[in-house]
Length: 172
Image (spheres, rainbow, N blue to C red):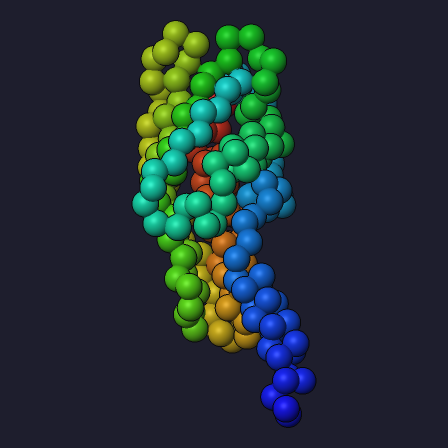
């Protein structure tokens, strides 16, 4: 009889634990906080996003949210405008995204292959960007918080690298 009064607390604890360990990032989570605006000679007006089935891609984010985040990041940087006549096309293929389920030092990695083409279809840029973010037990006690810190570092680094590399091609 004594154990019956603990069952609601046990159910609540398990629910909170599971909820804290499994959530996808909102598109705004991939947009860097500080993006320098650039004056681009050409802008991207279309982004195609695909994903492979490798790793934890579906667990970390969905491709539509990631596409929206890239669009918004590039828009803030002055490299994207959806109604741009003769705009360039960016193709992004998420190759891998991995995150440990349990770890004292959480390491999240993401590999994305990008291809930029001009309005005639000529490929101007093909590159694979690999980013890694780490968070340790000393930064956050809960695994979910360490995962969020590691993912935050991945997204910041990834978006800034992409903007820098595309900017070198589009801003002339």
